[in-house]
Length: 186
Length: 126
View (tube, rainbow over the protein chains, first blue to last red):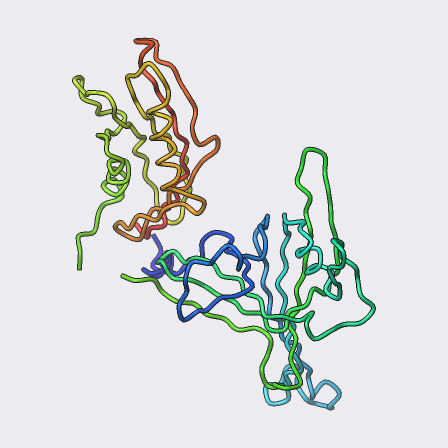
């Protein structure tokens, strides 16, 4: 076998296993098993988390400046999203997927304007092979993809949801996604 | 540092932990007394997924006892599976589908056999 055909001895300790769970509340310091009421919904197909930066090249229109010059690169913003397919069609889940909406008289009604209460912190937490966890907090999350419900013959109705994290004017240096990765007990 | 089990020992230990004797399916003693568990002893590494079967063997007029044991094993494995530390990493045992099926025995119509389907991921570096 070639000497470069090799993996780290801890490769299988740091795997993230299974789909994990979406939560309304979570304390990564305690990392307790979530209570029923903290679980947002059942999902199918796993959860996708992305935190993608947008850069501008200040040297793009500068003659003789090489493309992607390190000193001329500027970080403009972060786009932080959590995407999933929910199997939950409760009123609360329909409201979450719509974003700007209210539950009124047993029905969910989209609203004309956004309210601060439409934004909330959400979590995704998953197990690690060594007994630890990976946790992602999305700050000021709002569903920006709207409601998309697909039914099928002999199948389960699926609600496609994309939560986008937002920066707050009150904390403009705090980007809307945070990450934890802890190891389990030996 | 504690004792590190071989993959074979970890697998055997799992099946032996349900209160009945466990035998690798090719080494069942001729005088083995019911109830017992037999299992396929396959092995792999580097994240490979292997489907294994195990069988619960009961001598009983009804399926109740063997059903209970299958349910107990199913609960232990649970939704996310169970991780067994072993040399090189760990085994991740998950429920296969269908998890449990009844099977008769031509030798004796009092023998209740429940075949379990398991998926084992060998999360090991050797």
